[in-house]
Amino acid sequence: MTNKISNLFKIQYPIVQAGMIWNSGWKLASAVSNQGGLGLLGAGSMYPDVLREHIIKCKLATDKPFGVNLPMLYPDIDQHIQTIIENKVPIVFTSAGNPKTWTETLKKEGITVVHVVSSAKFALKSEEAGVDAVVAEGFEAGGHNGRDETTTFCLIPDVRRKIEIPLIAAGGIATGRQVVAAMVLGADGVQIGSRFAATYESSSHNAFKETIVDTIEGGTELTLKELAPVRLIKNGFYEEVKKAYENAATKEDLIQLLGRARAKKGMFEGDLKNGELEIGQVASLIDSVVSVEEVFKELLTEIRELKLDFNTIF
Image (tube, rainbow, N blue to C red; front, side, top):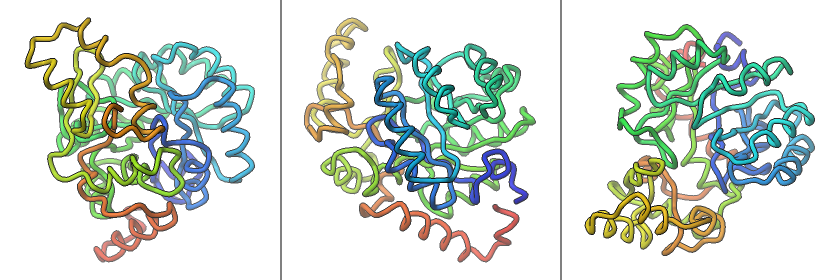
């Protein structure tokens, strides 16, 4: 293997599955790892004992490397850190916070640390904090996102010219052509979320998966910047948010409207009207719910059909 990301994670292909809340359980993470990519458990929607259970089950389901995605805003993050260390998880992706907070602690335990950013500025700060790689996530991405609305096409080359450590591109990537485009822009690997959310192995509700397939161009929007920017499918809850803005809602009004467990209600329980349905713009390119194996087959076939030197890409 000559690819920097494949070497760093000891995987076959530099394809990382995003650690999406309510989607990225042990079944999805282990399936991606078994296909030669890097599966991630989405710790942001797990209590510490649930995370421990998923780590144990993931180890039983794959003998390949996998990791944990850890939002640093999580209230019991110290417990998650301890769970990760105790269970010897080899790779951790941190996000939504200062990379200096836990990087040294994790690296002392021999854990590879990657931080997710939405700007070249924070990519540099992450490199200075000692992370092993960064994920640069463009505005197209689903779920929580950056406030600056920088697209992947602009973000990746800007980050590439400013950092030396390996770079993973994220946001708007679901096809083989998009994987190659990201690599041409300067990425060493890619992180894919929405395409893996619409797989049989995803832990989200089947109704949410079918809604991803039904989402058309323009069917999502980045909103709630006053709280934490998030890209949502335009459903009933989104319309409530839109109406709140039209009525000059304050931050406190938005907090009250959001309430608790909206994402769980939508993605995990399948309440398509009142739930928060997080997905990327690339949903409009997703035409069916398939297996993780089929996703990899589609990606690799399309890359090879471009008649490029496969080894120079991977």
